[in-house]
Length: 347
Image 1 (cartoon, one colour):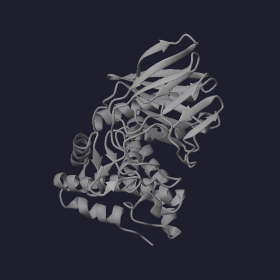
Image 2 (tube, rainbow, N blue to C red):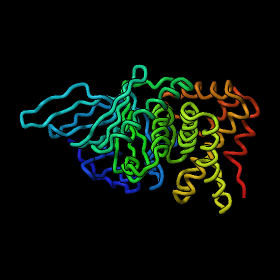
Image 3 (tube, rainbow, N blue to C red):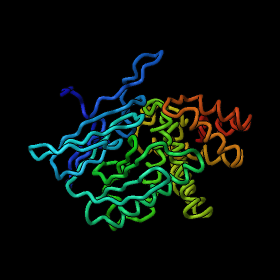
Image 4 (cartoon, rainbow, N blue to C red):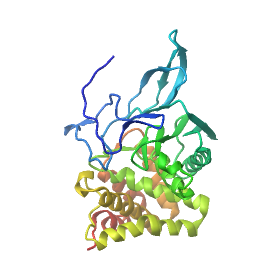
């Protein structure tokens, strides 16, 4: 048993119990990054991701009441039924940057198969329609990114309904989706966007790592852009263009009109609030990838993404790494797009 005093941040409510769902994020010891600059211990702001960590192998024993359904990073190798009526599940991960756990007595599950990977969607009773849809969207996103970028390398991927304050939050091999999306009043394509976004984080964050505190655009911008790949495969080119205009361009233009345009490649804390952070890092950052694809064409653009995924799998990408790789494949045109959308500002 390890006891470690800690300050639990409140931004996304990483540890919370509500409506018979317990979620625990950032609760289990992780390996922080150590490099020439020393240990990276700085925490992100409430509106961003919390820590910068390296890929590690986890074996976690979880003992719980026998009727409690446990969903966690990795897969359980076996379950021990204890004499006191509890059970102990032994979870093993592949390379993972964190260990997340959710639990409920009331979880239902919908499963899909994508190649060698089982996709599970866990949701509360009464939320079957959205729970099933989440399974479909996650599976479709996984199939599209597998074809465009590279195969998801793990045996299982879980989408779990959560009382998180965020729309969704990514963790290794599992994502949490806010319970408010499971309401029948929620628009169906809202759940599509958030599930596709969090699923894409399995490529950009879980496999290809980056400093989410100091260089958050490297995963968030590319993840947001990756939603368009699901959208195009599912709804077609015209609907995808509408998505780009409404979800990326409109919030960014609003930031410009209010004098909040900033470079995309800054630390999360530089943006000051969630609205600016989202409009610049997520949306303006996604527009960089939209325009890079338009400039280079599909062949060169997807060669860059496939090579980026291959080279930095389970490692760490830094600010200059994507640019250097993209220039080596796409040539001098890459720098102009980068200068305009990542470094440039409009006032």
